[in-house]
Image 1 (cartoon, rainbow, N blue to C red):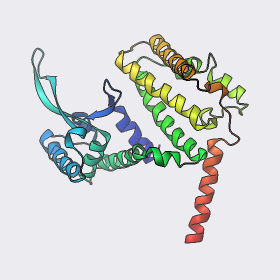
Image 2 (image 1 turned 45 degrees about the vertical axis):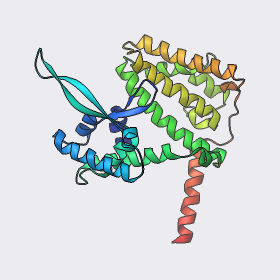
Image 3 (image 1 turned 90 degrees about the horizontal axis):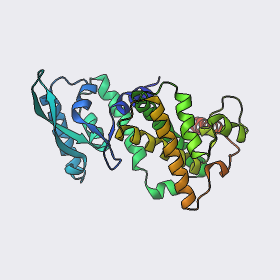
Image 4 (image 1 turned 135 degrees about the vertical axis):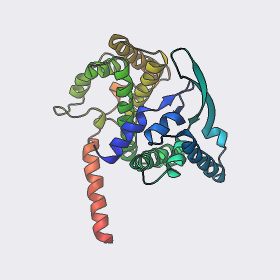
Length: 279
């Protein structure tokens, strides 16, 4: 695993979603991941992050929400402790103000800097991207979404992940499995179907991925059968919505000539040529 993949695995693992499907992190959990042992020391970092937030003309309350949490301190007793619900931007400011000597802080800076930039892309910026660029952008989001979904599915009792994902595909693609989709797209053996989708098809799958993860958490799913059923139901519901809106069914969307693997190679080659010319 490279540094970005390691950072993804660490910080995606402690991500939560609220009732409005907004992502957040708990400060107490982030403190542990960032290798701070004392809350008072970590609070100093949070305060510095709040100052940076305010200086950037952002409302502190939009990114740092103070909450109380009950923790057990004995077999029959518990007490309330302070905590914060943090936005991605708040986490980004915290790692920017953390101890740079800690390896975990460096990983946090890598993760939250990259992810915050991805989230900041505006509608105007996105509309100006070419279809190939949109595909690459949406594919990066589905990769991260699938990683996070797999972590949640594992906690929900899933062991056979191929079967789990096929339930989602069958719901969205009117009964088609991943193999069925690959055959319809005339892909080579073991070629990734997501790498051969256009941006609209990737967006539909990203919605399936994110909504399934949220439902698994919200419904507190704990068995593999229920997780599979949930994935199918979410896929089917999204399909129904596309139909109601008069959209194109995902299986009717075109398979583009070049896979994303080919596009990535082309982009890398162009970058290499530009670097040679400018060096």
